[in-house]
Length: 64
Image 1 (cartoon, rainbow, N blue to C red):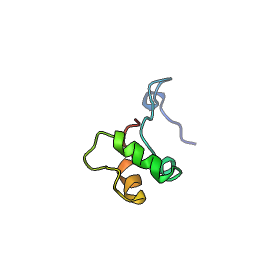
Image 2 (image 1 turned 90 degrees about the horizontal axis):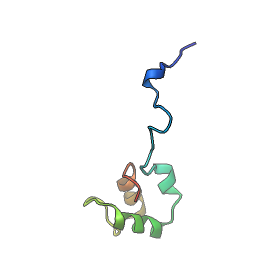
Image 3 (image 1 turned 120 degrees about the vertical axis):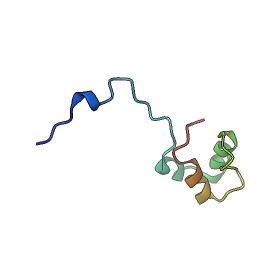
């Protein structure tokens, strides 16, 4: 059995995932994705993109 060293585990409250995941974005309506894209500070993402391109562009971006 393999164990995990406690020193490499984030301590309580240290790790917060505040980025968008692909699964989360795929469940949103296109209009909601456009709204998020308008708020994201990125020149690579904009509301005129297709739904798939928005999902790809927003994945991993910090939540707004």
